[in-house]
Image (cartoon, rainbow, N blue to C red; front, side):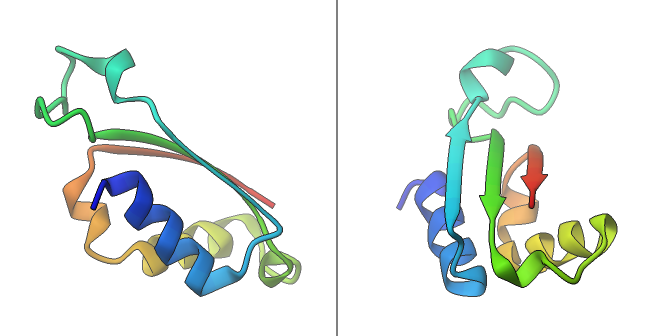
Length: 83
């Protein structure tokens, strides 16, 4: 399964988002630090969910990182837009 699909699956299961966009930006970082040649090293995520309403910014980021679990060690960069 593609990493972007795994990200989508895990975040959907954890937060039931009203909006979720997962973008693979790996092609923009080809040859840069962290590029492992897999084409699945850099991602951008935009997520909106009611579950985040009572959380502060840091708590939201920690919740997403926790939901992603071992994916955090398989990718180099993850840009998050959480609301």
